[in-house]
Image (cartoon, rainbow, N blue to C red; front, side, top):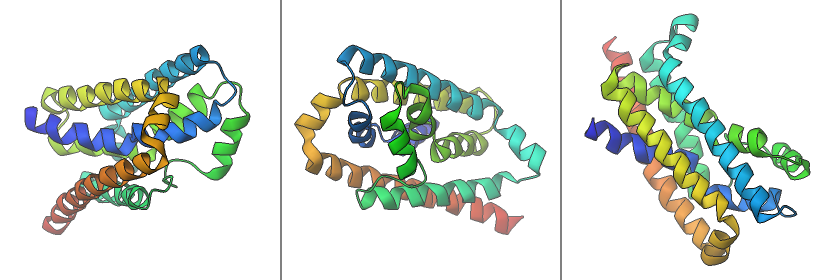
Length: 207
């Protein structure tokens, strides 16, 4: 369980990328009070956490319904993580999370907590695929569920803390600091993505 947790935590944390969300959150909440920003951050992280936990626990139903093998989903999830990692290495907003149109729509919204903040910025396709792949890799029992759900909960706490103090984080790190952290997270996420693809590809070849 400890080994599973040590892989799950960085995988979920880096794909959600709380630091990378700070500039977008600041841009979308420029005219809102600090109290309102904190409320939206709390609502968004709770919603995203529930979404990720749901897919972690019941995502295997997708495999059964569509007849997709676990190995194929691992490869697909790894490729999706790699696309996100490459964007992070270039210090760009991952296109797999959101589009420019969704960001503009969020800036015009009165409450961005659920859309687009919770989904797709926090609980996006990459994060959903990651928790499903982790659960599929280690089985559906407590040995996988406890570490993966723990990783999700810790990630949501870190995300809330970053968003709740977004102005301060951006002021301290500045754009350069955020870009450096993005690249570090992207490099680690790329390595995790390669491992996912390797594991899934090996199973497909053996099958």
